[in-house]
Image (cartoon, rainbow, N blue to C red; front, side):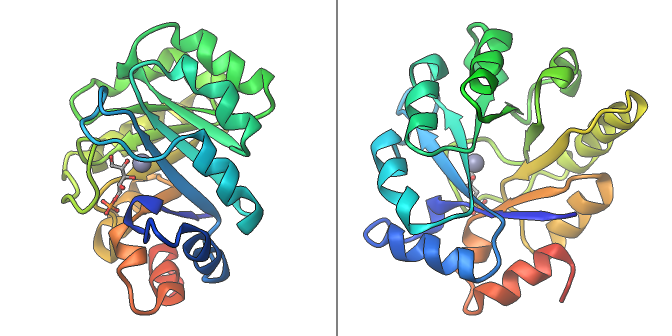
Length: 216
Ligand code: DX5
Ligand code: ZN
């Protein structure tokens, strides 16, 4: 099943409560919450306090994508605030396996993200410890960038490895996803699609979400 995760980065930050409700009603499966710290990436976005404030407005899965230098500082607060899943970056360094374990022990889904420049094989040692791998299809930091074409091959390679090992691990893709690139990512084996500008910029959000799922 294809799951659609609109990225709140493209929502109206003065009306986030309304926008998560709107996205949920339009058929979104998850809310993708991009957390940036001004260090791992240049911008600063959303913290745990905002996640807690949004929680009562939406019943969908809260998918927190940590683009931060010290994910270990954020994990417990994010889950306490209502995150259902927490994604950390391989490139953040630190004790990746330990942080993934902490996420699970606190009752959330653990996920690991990888930047476009990092060899895809570097996630292989963690595949047994995650519910999802997030393949970045742009360099993290900003919405509205173009999908990097090399991402399709990386998705296919990871998908092959997951199938070969008989694992049940979701493959999420994030960055530059629209009607065309969603089709490439789905065919390669991605089953969780993040889309910011394509969903929040759409006149008909429900139709945009159906297109991403290939239902339209
Ligand atoms: C980039 C973020 C993405 C981004 C996606 O660092 O992780 O989630 O907001 O935005 P679009 O879909 O506009 O590329
Ligand atoms: Zn993201």
